[in-house]
Length: 131
Image (cartoon, rainbow, N blue to C red; front, side, top):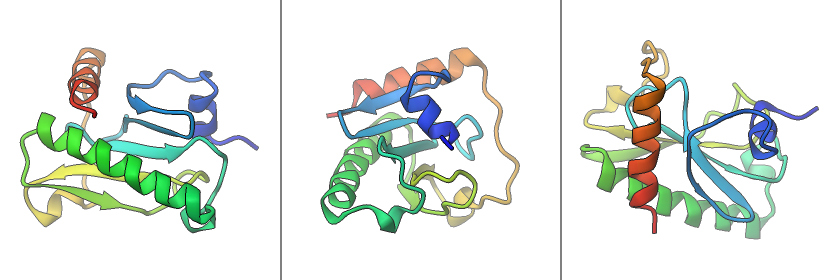
């Protein structure tokens, strides 16, 4: 059964795109811990990150690094945290979260709520810095 991320890849669900190529997609998390909190996924339906073949895994990491660089340029922060939890959606994905302290990437914190305009502006800003 397709996950919500597979539906995003198929264009069935709206999302705030940051970057895309033929194998990977990056978009804003709609339940963010911080402004700029993003998700990076393989387009291929794979439940568990470490079930990706070596080439796909390496490609995902390279793409993720480029997305993290764009977020760091766009959102004032000390670091970009990379988290792999993988339990909430059965599709391999990486969280990239702009942080200034360790507690900024604590998933037990209340999620932020932004308007569509803020999401759009944030996605456009990060996308403009993606190289």
